[in-house]
Every structure is written in C-alpha cells, then in structure tokens.
Image (cartoon, rainbow, N blue to C red; front, top):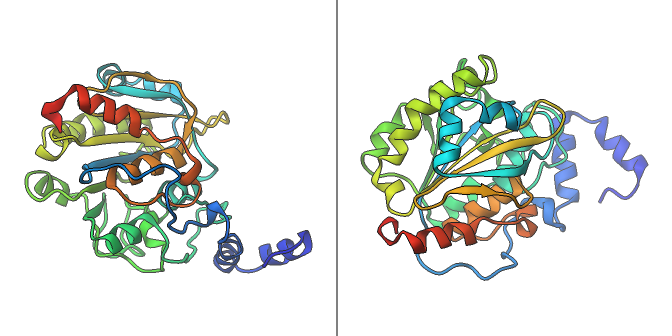
Length: 297
C-alpha cells in the first residue's frame, strides 16, 4: 500500500510501467481501480444493444462543430455540449474510456496493466467485440504508421494483443454480416485528426459513418458514439456525438469519458468499471428515444 508522499515519490522514480502498475494496484479497493463491480443502478432488462465507438484526436469542442459533416451529424442527431476529457495526453483518456481509471498514468508510453479492461470484461461475459484499427497488421506492438499503440488501449490490459483487435478493413465485411455487439473504431494518425487536422477527420467520418448507419446492427436499436480524446486547447472540453435513431438535440448535463464507459456498460448489460460506477449514463435518453422509435428496437 502506498501510504505517504515519500512512498509516492519513490514509486514515481521507478520505471514508468512498474510505477503505473503499483499505483493501480494500490488503488484497487477504490472506484478508480478498473475492476468490475456492480452498477449503482439496477441493470437494465433485455438483451444488449449494438454499440459503435469512434475516437478521434486533439480537437476543441467549437472547432469540431465547425466542420461541415460533424456539424451535420450534430444537427441531425444529438451532441453533448458539456463533455470533458479526463487527462492529458492521449493514453490516460483511452484508459479512462475502457477501464474507468487512468491507472496513475500521465504519458503515452507502454505500461502493462492488469487484465481489467472493457475487452477482458466482455470476453469473460461472452459478449462479442472487436477493435478496428487503421494500419493494424496483426501485432499490437509493432504495426506501422498510421497505427499508434497509444490509441489502442486494449493492448495494455494484461500485456497481450487480443485477437479481437483487427484491421480497419474488416469493418465493412462485419457491418454487412456478423457485427459484434461492440465495435471500437480507431482511425490512423492522419484520419483521426492528430497529424492532418480535424478537416481530415471530418472527411473520414463522412465516408465511414454512413456505412455504420446503413447497417442492420445500427438500425435495430444501435448507437454510435463519436468523441475526441482531448481538447488540446487547455479548456478540457470536447464533443460527444450520439448518433442513434430518434435521438436529437443538445445533451447539456456534465459528462466525461467515464460517462461514455458507463453508457457502453449499460447498453451491453455488464457492470460498470471503476469511476464509471459513479458517472452519469446516457441510458435514460437512449431508452426514451428507442421508446419513441419502436421500429429501431
């Protein structure tokens, strides 16, 4: 147990990966540990619903909403106007979205963490999932640009490359066939806006989102979340687009990446992880929209 400031300084002088693991282990008893635990609200009834997640890079809220395709999605569906990043740089935010904890990490280096992430949880529950990564060539740890390990959180939990991580090119086939219940979609370092700017991300979305929204999985009660890892502008505010049949308008309540994880867990009917247990979920809004749109369910 890390008991005082002196102990903490000692841990931080260790190798980054070991320090992160010790910090995470020390925090295991509290909500940020990333371990599965029961949701504070009753689990929703009924089967899991398809969830699609697209994570883009380093764009403030207002700049994102100035892009033509992104603005069109916000007008046609729903946008969270008070949504926040968790940390800086990229990696802690990806970990927050997939385990409910940053594990004390404040860099983009590789850290082997316990097998306590969303992918591990879904696999144990028998729930299908895939992470579609642009540039992925079969190895989480050595695939070439435009793939980036720091944008693939699933490789950090347990220190292995899950078989569920697949090339982006598999997405079209799966959308037309056996679509997993969770489709996590990570563009490469240009199309996510990191290296080539948000206009490139906007163009990529204009080609990818229609494939998702024309799929049977999305039409039958599915939801697509599009967000950004961090603002890059110092204000911490990023956009979250919620693309679901029947849901439209502004979502003004305070939300963050833990809220996204809470909503994913509620949709897939699994317990919330870490700090997602206390986060605000969009489950009520999505269920209300589905009730108004019986054909989508």
